[in-house]
Amino acid sequence: MNSEFFVPSFDNTKLFAKKDIPSEPKGIVLIVHGLCEHQGRYDYLTKKLNESGYGVFRFDHRGHGRSEGKKVFYSNFNELIDDVNFFADMAKNEYPSIPLFVLGHSMGGFAVSMFGIKYPGKANGFVMSGALTRNNIGLASDLPRDLPVDTYFPNELGGGVCSDPNVVEAYANDPYVEKQISAGLFYEVFKGVEWVKENSEKFADPVLLLHGCNDGLVSEKDSRDFFGDISSKDKSLKIYPLLFHEIYNEPVRDEVILDTTNWLDKRINQ
Image 1 (spheres, rainbow, N blue to C red):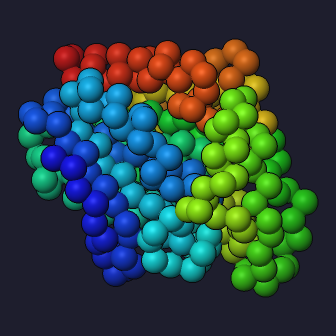
Image 2 (image 1 turned 90 degrees about the vertical axis):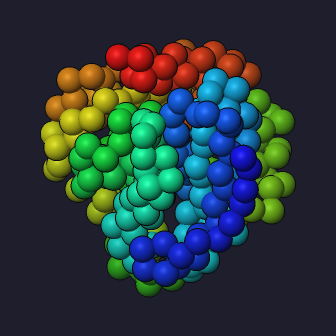
């Protein structure tokens, strides 16, 4: 069953979403995308998850892709968390008898790390790819803290997303990849990162942390630090040599996806 739709989130902001569900799924994976991108960039990952027996829910963040909301803007970092929670509830309500996993990349990994802290035990497990949990690399750290929140800056992330030039070119030409980022979003991300730092020990759910060693947008040290600070008894960390930021789009992406599905399968069969 495949469908796409708009749905009002917790505060009635209409978000664009997709469901790709094979017959008799053994689990559901909620995919949460990163900054300035959209859920459509996860078509290949969705296909591979479907082939492995997993249903997939995914959505465009507010202000991203086809969703409503001020462009690439958050007035409070809890909006990120509660949009994830909205779709987690939707997936659990529609498929109450099978496990729910939440997979987040980059800012999506940041969002789902906060979701796991704020709503412990709601998901059966988490996968985080290049997750921004510490900002060790200092993304936008030189940004003045007194700018109007609706000040916008060019999206300069593109060159660092992947080692494959075709992926970089597709990113640049994608009409649903946002070309500007607001100061308001950066300010809320900074606040959220501090909140994650202060509350990491409250994250106790099963988690697989994945990161590219050559990630120039989010340091792999973010994942190492988060791994050390959380209280999960079931936690795994893999740093891939040579890979850039978007490990699910790198030339060896099938290896990364296989690591992901093997981890999911083990949590279902426990």
